[in-house]
Image (cartoon, rainbow, N blue to C red):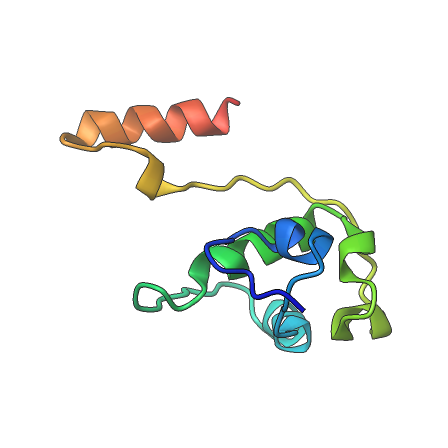
Length: 108
């Protein structure tokens, strides 16, 4: 099994058959037991993979989760709107730059 070195996208990891540590049982618990969650982790601790996993889950991409813990649950894989902000992709030097990035992302 390949290590997903440098790959930060859940669907790419799964489609390539790379090693994925299944955290979907904890993700299911997180979304079922909480209304609002603030996720904070230091750099290089899997935030991007977690966020892309949530995006795939809320995007209704059930096939990506075959064989993972969440596929054994009663989760319905309903499709929900997903807006993902990636602040590493924007050069923000002023508040207006950030505001414009958010406007452009939500209108895409």
